[in-house]
Image 1: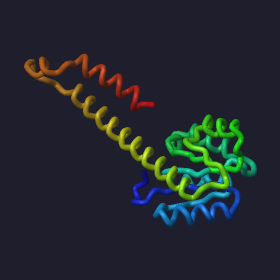
Image 2: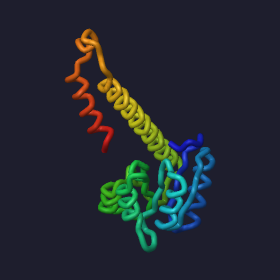
Image 3: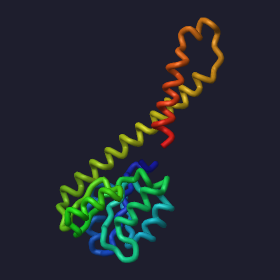
Image 4: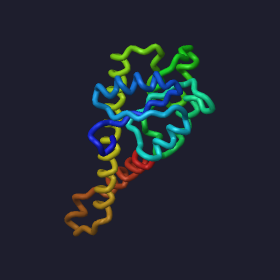
Length: 178
């Protein structure tokens, strides 16, 4: 999550009325909200400050929401930001396309405000949990690295299972160095 106390949500939709309605709804729940009318604006805003979650329309000029989502998922800095599609494109093939592009959820317009808020809250909690897990794994990796680099007396060497440390390092390398 961002260093500020409130999660930042980026709303990307080419319709000003939709951006305004979603901003009002999310602001009532004490979220920080920023908006973009197209993919280029969204990329610029994310360059200034990474969002904790993105609500993304599909039908936009130039770069559609599916393309933007794929671009975000292919970029190291933005790949872990959950993307919720909020769109009028409701065909099952569109939903599948959104999830395949990297979206974590797909909400059809017109949307139910309560459902949207609950899904936003759910995905922010999941992101916070994943961020905490990454942080703990990185700390564990550092501790095991530190432990394996130390010199030990013969008595201590009997207590430390070097094969176990080696396996732990491999495990952590796999899960921490994506």
